[in-house]
Image: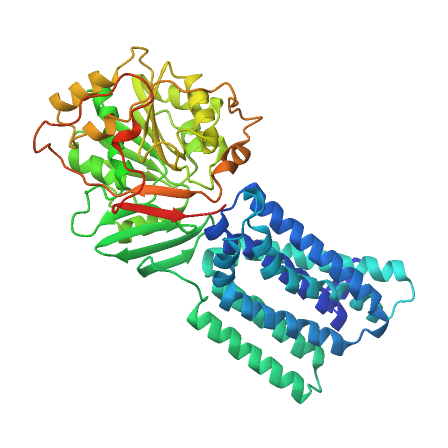
Length: 550
C-alpha cells in the first residue's frame, strides 16, 4: 500500500505536475520578493507582512477565478498559464529595480511603503499560478470532488515546501536575484512545453522561445534601474542579505541590502572615510587600559583594521554572522587574520554566551537603519555584555536613529535599556539634531561621571590616534525616556520604534580626519547639557545621503 502511494507521487500526471511546479514557483517567488524589495524598503516586519499578504491575496483571487473557469480547464489552458507566468518573471527581473525605485517615491505611510511595489511586481504572476490548482482538480478525472481537491492541494503544498527550502538553502546562497528569476522563468517555460507535448503548437513554440530569449537577455543585462554609486566590483546574494562592493572616486564601499555599511580609502586603508567610525576611539578617552576588544559585526572591518594599525598593544576579536561578509572583507578590504585579529563566524549573542573570554571594550556594530537584530538590543543582552567586560570595561554601540524628534524612539529606548545595566551612558550624535544618522552610545561599568570638559582635556593630553575635539563636542549624558520602553527578550518592539525613520534620509558624513590638530583653536566646549549639536552641519559637500525606505 505504501509503495503504491510512493509510486503515485513519483509518477505524477500532467495536472499534478502543474500543481507541483506552481507550488515550487509561488513559494520561491515569495522568498525572492524579500530579497528584491529589501535594498529599497528594508526587510522589516512591515515589508514581510506586505509580501505574505499580497501573495496570499493573489493566490486566493487566482483560486477563485480559476474555480469559476474550471469547467473550461484543459492542458492547453495550463500551458498558457505557465507561459504568461514566465513572461511576467522576465519582465520582473528586467524592470524590477526600476519599478522599486519608482514606487519608493509614493506618498504613503511608512509602514505601507513597500505594498505597491510588492503588489505590482509579484501580484500578477502569483495570481496566474493560483489558476493551476482548480484547473488541475477539474482535469484529475476523479468523480469525488473532495478527494480530487485534497490530493491537488497536497501536491501543491509539497511543491511549496520544496520551493521554500530550495530557494532558501540552495538558490539564494548560490545565485543572484536575476539568476534566480531566470531559474523560475525557465522552469515555467519548461513546464508549459512538457504539458503541451507531444504536439506543441507553433504559437506555443514561438512564445516559449521568445520568453526564454527575454529571460536570458534579462539575466545577461541585469535589472534596469538608476544606480550612480560607482563601479560594482563584486555582487552577490548571501544567506542573510544582498552584498555589493562598489568603487568610486578612490573609495571602496560595502553595501548591504542597498545601504552603505563600510568604506575604505584605496590609497590609505586605515583612514576613516565615514566620520562616525572615528568615534570608535572615544572609549580610549574614558579608559587608559584597553588591550582586548570585541567587535560584534564585521562589515568592511573598518574599526578592527584601524585599531590594529593605531594601537599596537590591542588584540581584536570580531564576530560576524555572515561568512560571505568575512570572505569579502578579506578579499576586498585588506583584512588578514593574525595573532592580533581573530574572526568568529557566528551570531554575536551566541558567541558571548559561549565564550569565557573577557574584554576591555565591546563594540556593537551590527545595527542598521532598517534591520536590527532585536536579540542584540535587550536588557538581557546588555547584562550579557556586562558579564563579558572587565571590571572597568566599556560598551560602545553604533546606533542608527535620530537623536531627537519622532525618529528618535529607537535610540532613546536603547539608551534607556543600556542605562538599566550600565551606571553611566554617554552618546555622541554624528550629523546634527534631527536627521537619521549614526549615534554612538558609550556605556561604562565605572559609575564616575566624566564630563564633556574632562573629555576635551583628555583629548588634548592623550594621543589616541585620532584628534577627537569635534566628536567630543556632541556629548550627551541624559535623554528623555519616559515615553519609550525598556527592551526585553519577551517584548522588544524594535520595528515599531524604528517605524518613524522609514523614508527619512540616512545621513553619513564623510570624515575630514586629522590625526593631530594643526593648532589648538578647537571650539570651546559648550555647556554640560544635551544641546551641543550646532557644531556639525547636517548636510554639506562631504555628506553621503542614502535615501532608504524600509
